[in-house]
Amino acid sequence: MKADACGECDIHKLSIHMISPQHMTSLKDWGQLLGFFVAVPAAIVGFAKAIYEISASRKQRAEELRWKQAQAAKDLLDDIHHDKLASQAIHMMDWVDGSADYKIRDNLSVIISYPVVLSALALNQGEICNERDAYIRDCFDWLFYRVDRLEHYIRRGLIQFEDVQMVFKVYAREVGYHEDVFRSFFQFHEYDLAREFFARYSKVPRVP
Image (cartoon, rainbow, N blue to C red):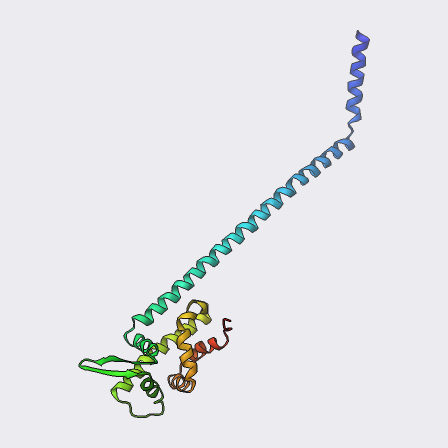
């Protein structure tokens, strides 16, 4: 029995001597390698998650910006329709085939037709204007001032053309029909951006 115990001691000592410092280093290297293979997938997953969160955040910001642009365009259109003079210019362009009664001041109302409008807008060489013509020119002055600002805001990225495109489509057609009259009026008031705004419609593909 004593001999057997000694033999077991010898085997234990032998096994201890078999795990050399070189073996210990190898085991350590294998442990580090295993840790590497565990850490890399975790890092990839973390990186992918970060990319997804950044993308989602950008998408959300883009959607918020787009909503703000649409809201800003609506506010600008509302401003035109709420302005006493600009809204009357819109009304005159809506009545190209007729005429309507306009109160140009207290106790003075006049009938204005579209040919009268075009005639008044052509007075850009210092001609004498009567009250009716002066009223028409004031109305279109305030309308095209706002259109000029629309083009400015489009160029600054505050609104997008598509948000106001359909609203002004019919008026752009009228500007195109009587290009000489409106171009002269734009030049007289230096509404270069208003002219550029309506020029956008010539670049829009026609719907088949």
